[in-house]
Amino acid sequence: MAIKLAIVGVGKIVRDQHLPAIGANADYELIATASRHGTVDGVPAYTSIEAMLDAVPEIEAVSLCMPPQYRYDAAKVALEKGKHVFLEKPPGATISEVQDLAATAASKGLTLFASWHSRYAPAVEAAREFLASTTLHSMQINWKEDVRHWHPNQEWIWAAGGLGVFDPGINALSIMTHILPRAAFLTGAELTFPENRDAPIAAMLAFRDHAGVTINADFDWRQTGKQSWDILAETADGQMVLSEGGGELSIAGQHRAGGQNEEYPELYRRFAGLVKAGKSDVDLAPLTHVADAFMLGKRKFTEAFYD
Image (cartoon, rainbow, N blue to C red; front, side, top):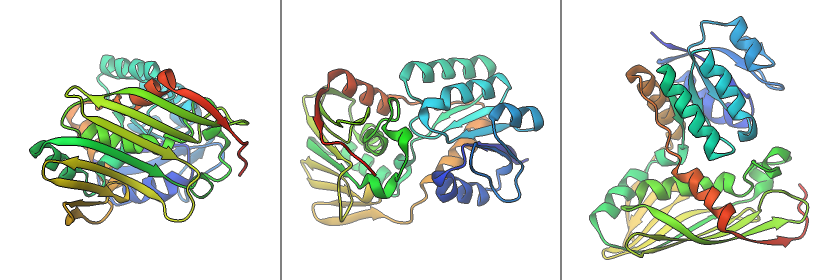
């Protein structure tokens, strides 16, 4: 039987990624949406999650795709109504609220899935396997893109809790925490804030793992021209280059892995498997690194940013 699914927050990411992935997966039947502004043709639409769940009690799971500042309240309503919950990344605005949701889901025997789509990029697993087989000397992450292209006129992303440059940067951190052979921790950070914004436009992060290996990350939302989503690792077996946001892998100059992007289809396959198995997956490591950056980060200010 297909999982009767609803989407909350119908915006660009839903149209670009969620709807195609759901439509191609026989494990789901999309039966309702809730959004203040967006609808999906042929699917009953409501303006709030409360109204939707009251009107369509047969909903079994909800996919929450609104800005992170509003995700906790929606997830809490869904869990209290006995629904499984898929959380778009980042899973929430704070670590403590996601921990509370995980405890609530566990107490009710429901699935909570904190999704990290970049972990499912086609070359990420091959990179993880390679790093497990060699000795890592250092790592450099360069994640630079043009916010005007990817998030035009999205005010929520510049508000407190919207994460700013960490909205894309957390994708890099989700890959880093997945492929490293040992856990790393933040040792320092510099965050650059436009003088008229409450979230950073750039960030420089320094990490170290238990063995003393250094990892540095450079996030910037002011990139024009070619966009950069690259992870470079110096190893005993040559340089590893994981490029295109995890889409392509080369080692010592030789192409090793890559292929078609199946990130969101894989997320929905994972969610269906968790629901059927009665399990949850709530990895908070990427969000924890962002929280650490805000705690340890030195702040500097730059000129005002306008779309």
